[in-house]
Every structure is written in structure tokens, then in C-alpha cells.
View: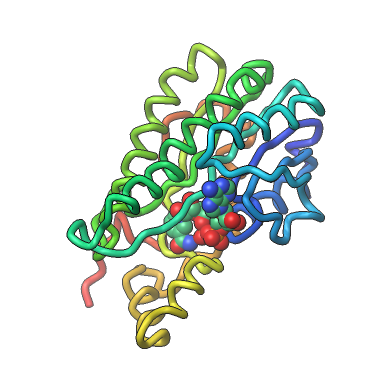
Length: 249
Ligand SMILES: NC(=O)c1ccc[n+]([C@@H]2O[C@H](COP(=O)([O-])OP(=O)(O)OC[C@H]3O[C@@H](n4cnc5c(N)ncnc54)[C@H](O)[C@@H]3O)[C@@H](O)[C@H]2O)c1
């Protein structure tokens, strides 16, 4: 395994499960010191130092970064991955749901990034990678609030990448298709016919299967790697071809 992240410090939100957990595993195996921020420790203990943090709360984010700063002044990599879903059309959505999802998925990303910036600015190879989604660039049924949040994440990525030039901070995002994580497993468990729902999710991705969380993590780690010094303001699709390809049936 290459040691491209040896001597570097990474902070990953939503590190206890799914994509975030694979990111902390990958970064650790490539030499990084990793802090995992999450509302629950999940399975990260072997790979990251757990810092309890609700990205939906300013106080919680402030306290998490104070704990990290007490251990290291410099952060080299920030992976803004924590996020929650919401199912339904715009008619189904409640005010509470709008506020909850945008607060965690969008404002949470902003408050974590702001808290990390003073530490990222001290790095010689600072990189932020945001977990966005295919739904930022393609419409899928019954994901109105969630899609709005990820559209905002994409726009925020571009804005932060622009501002980051002056500070030497690269900012990119990954756009996963449906990925085989505990999140999707929970979603399927709630479906009327889970097998039929899984088959439909697999079929809508041209490769005919769900994306693995390791594949998404690998793209995040690629974008975070100091070797990608010329890559900023990009969205890397990891979606089994779903955004770009049209396959005749
Ligand atoms: N799974 C997919 O199909 C898919 C597709 C596209 C994008 N994504 C995005 O990938 C990211 C990770 O999703 P996943 O599938 O790995 O989900 P997951 O549910 O397996 O993991 C998400 C993690 O985020 C944590 N989290 C939730 N709310 C939080 C909060 N307020 N503060 C801190 N941590 C919090 C959870 O505790 C959990 O450990 C999300 O941003 C999601 O929108 C997922």
C-alpha cells in the first residue's frame, strides 16, 4: 500500500458507517492520522480517533475542532461526508424535514469547513472533498428535499474551490450513484418489496449493480491526494455510468 498520506492529518465527517468508514480505513492504511467526526462511533475505532460531533450543531462542531486543535494545529485533508436522506416529492416534504436535511447536509458542511479552514490554511497540501450525489445533476423520483441539498453541495463545492485558491486549499466533490451502504440497506428494509426495489436500483445504473462504498472512498482519497495538486472545482461521478450514459434496452 502506498504511503501518500504519511505525516498528514485528515478529518472525516460521518466516519462511523458506509462511505465515511471506508474513507477512514483507506486514509489510515496510506499513512494518515485520522479524526472521525460522527454522532456515533460506529466501526471506526481501529482506523480513526473518534470525536463526537453533530454537524447540525454549531456548538458541537466548535467543540470537536477545539479537541482536534489541542492535538494538532494543522489539518491537511477534510472530507465532508456526513449526510442524511429524505424520501418524497416536494408535496410530501414537511417544513421540519426541509430544515433538518438542509441544516445537516448543507449548512453542516459549511460550518465544518469554516471551522477547519484556519487549520487547513497551515497545510502545504490542503484538500477538501465533499460527498455530493448523482441527484445534484440528474432527477430521480421522490428525492426532492435530498436533491435540493445535494445541488447546494455541488454549488458550494465550486464556490469554496474558488475562494480556496487564495488560501491554497483545493475543493472537489464526488457524486456517487446508489451505493451499497447501511443507509441503502435501511431504505430497502422499509420498502414494500425489498427485492423488487433492489433490482430497480441496480437496473437504473448502466453497470447493472450498486456502487460499492470502497469505490466511492477510493475516488474521495484520489481527490484528496497531494499528487492531484492541479485538480480543484471538479465533481467526480462514481455512479456506474448513470449520469453520462444512455444504454438502449
Ligand atoms: N449510499 C448512497 O447511495 C449514497 C449516494 C450518494 C451520496 N451519498 C452520500 O454519502 C454520504 C454518506 O452516506 P452513506 O451511504 O455512507 O450513509 P451511512 O448512513 O452509512 O453513513 C452516514 C454516517 O453519517 C453520520 N451522520 C448522520 N448525521 C450526522 C450528523 N448530524 N453529524 C455527524 N454525523 C452524522 C451517521 O451516523 C453515519 O455514521 C452522505 O452524505 C450521502 O448523502 C450516499
